[in-house]
Length: 118
Length: 106
Image (cartoon, rainbow over all chains, first blue to last red; front, side, top):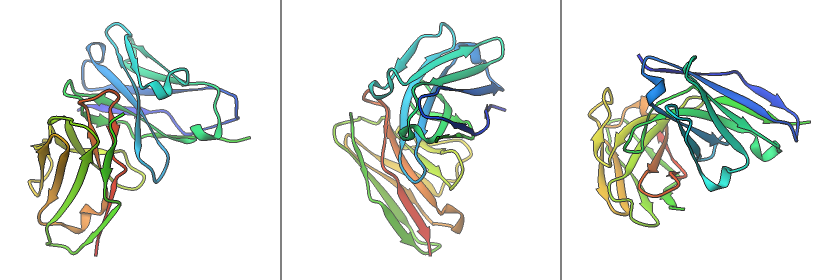
C-alpha cells in the first residue's frame, strides 16, 4: 500500500534552515509528483509547491519562492523540502502529499511540526 | 489567487443531514475537492472532481456543484464525522484551500 513517512519534529533557531524528508513506498516514485503544504495549527492549508521526481522539475506557489526548495532522491524514493531563513512565521505543520493529475491529493504524510524559536 | 469561502462551523445531531458549502471567488469548473481533517491528523480525501467519491469513503458523503458554488453533504451524520472539512481547488494556479468548516456532532 502507498505510504508517505515524514521525518520527526524540528526545533530551529530564527535565521536557520531546515530540511524535511518524506520517504515513500508502495508506488513508482520515480515517475510521480510530490507536493508540500503548510498548515499553522487551527488554520487553513497552503500549497507550497510540487516536484516531478522524473526530472526534478518544480513549480512553486509564488508566496513560497525563495523560502522553500524541493528536491528528490529517486534511489531512496524520498522527497525533501528545504526551508531557509526561518522566522517565527514559518512555525507550522508541514505535510507532503501525492498529487493526482487532476490536482487532488490522495495520499498524505503524517505531517511534521517545525517550531522556530530562539 | 482563488479564494474559497466556507462557513466556519456547524453543529448537528447524529442521523441528521448536513451540507457544507464552499464558494470560489472565480470559476474552478469541476476542479473542486473535499477533505476531512481530524485534530493531529493529516487531511483525508473524501470527494474529487466535485462529485466523485474517493475509494473507501462511505456513501454517506457526496459532493455537488460546478463553477463557483459547491457543497459537501453528509447524510446521515455519525459521531465519528466530527472534524474540520476543507475544500480545495485545482483549476487555477496556485492550488488553494478553503478556511475550513468545523463540524460538531451534538
